[in-house]
Image (cartoon, rainbow, N blue to C red; front, side):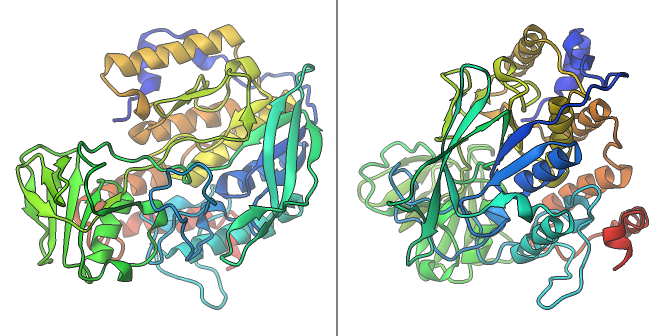
Length: 483
């Protein structure tokens, strides 16, 4: 569903697209910047901001860096995640999760995700989630990011002041007996003033749920993949998994060895779709659910019916910023966060409010890094933005291009195959190296291998020449060359 926006804009002669080139005369300023979140986006944002000379404070609700890569066996009491008052678990990891990208392509540009010495490290090319967390901790340690982080600090509200500065209200948090983050009831609010705020709180905590006719009368159980951890609770059950992306592909295969039956429903396939997965006796793929009955039966668009115990929604997430008050300038409409110039800056509040990590179907860490460099350079004055009017014209052209291509609003931030061009555009603005050719080719080959070999792609591949190119490139980085 991605659209090559940059090519479309070139054809429409949108002048704003190339106006943010680095100026020849530098007038560098140092800003006091709040970064919300110490996950993969917040960590690299803090590093790039400090490299640019800014003063940085990172707010993190948890007690360690890593964001969604911090695994917990705990789940939320509301399995669908619809109760707005539920205690929030900020990780969506399941125990068996391995990366669906090769580590060479996945890592930050100048801190390669190579195998590192130490106990319990995972040397596999597609490692488990703990290895990614350890990599992020290595990154924080290497670049001194941890000293900028205020752990166990919950951001309650971020609001703009009359003079254009931002007030950040925070409160110390703690953990209950289930290791869930809670605000200390007796803690006082702490109000601080910042020149700029960079939002890096991720988007894997507010579930999207499929709309199923008749579901309110259906007697079975429902949950979202956000609350999936291990397969054992599904032993001997008939489970319907809704979705066709990474979590659905993984989870249906994770629970198949213990479940009685697993049926995967997807709206991205033809209505007549019905097939048994090779290598399994109890795993079937269907078109989307048509409706559910109060007798427990679920009817698919292909006409098949299943008496199911549970429906698991592997249907993604909504953008959610409960702490952010922009007086209505920035909104979320059908999962379109906007208006945002290049998925980062709301024109009316730029450059002092920005978002990192909004695009999806991407290689996340390098994209976070390019966005961070751009934001840091703009805040210092080393890089300039177009005027507010030009940015809004650019956004409207983008929206029109999506509409002309019949792409739904909820896919606004799905950049997919356009990500390399997007990253290279950011690199041009920053005056830095763009995406390496080997990384681009490796991502393409990995994606194709994943499509052709969904059961084995993590352990069988044929891009050894690209791995060699990557490691030749890594030699120039001290963090990798000394290993």
